[in-house]
Image (cartoon, rainbow, N blue to C red; front, side, top):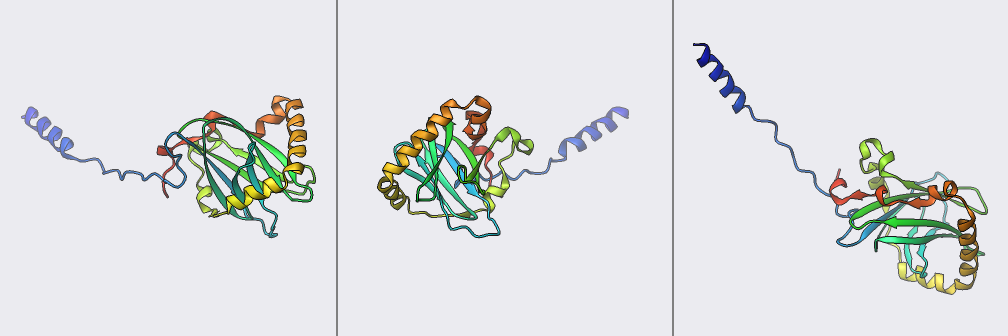
Length: 203
């Protein structure tokens, strides 16, 4: 009799189904394409509207992104190590450096905020995976307004300003090389700072 009761109890437990889990959908906008890495630049909105754009440019002079107040830009790039320039203003332009050490298939997030400083008008903050709650992809990134910038026009502007930009970029690189690791680290994207495509899920 006890054996029958135990068998019935086991059968009842076995037939209870676990709640079905809805598969999470990858946010393909932000996921890195095949064989590439993805850079996501965000510029949180400030109450005081600012019309001064942030131009993110590689060492070859190609514009990767242009940020205005309260916008987000997405830039697929080749993996590896590269130095990027954050250019603000035009007369003369101000150059700040951002070093990127990127892995294939990962998405990296950088937050840029305007601040009152003649030498460093942009506060550059790398959003690191290890510093996020449960290492989750930061949801506030999706709240920013995506911007469709004319990158070709931006690149032409960089070529037009090439003389002034190159001289200031060389000075910025000199200061970068002279700085210690503690000063360079906040403006350095490390390989493990990014998220895999499977970890960037749609809300």
